[in-house]
Image 1: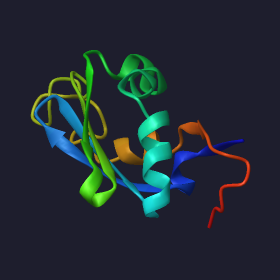
Image 2 (image 1 turned 90 degrees about the horizontal axis):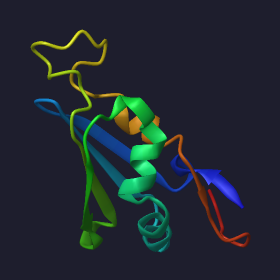
Image 3 (image 1 turned 135 degrees about the vertical axis):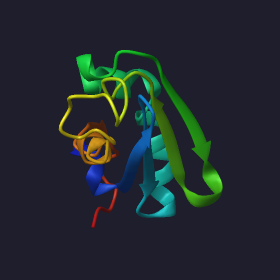
Length: 110
């Protein structure tokens, strides 16, 4: 079945210049492998569409059940020059958590 990522994870985001830094943290240890399989750099880039002009990098942090994504060229030049309302990319994690992913039909969700 498909569910929004927010059912399995929470997130945090911020900026480093024109790069949005988005962390996705599994709500339960058993959710981490599903998230790792489903939330790929390619899917993240497709989810954001034209908002992310550059590549998307993913870093795995299995010891804390998290993934970190760098979305390059996503903030219109960065906080001091962008005309975007969210100059520091603080809402990017909320946007990513709306992505729908496949999970096993029998996965217990909270």
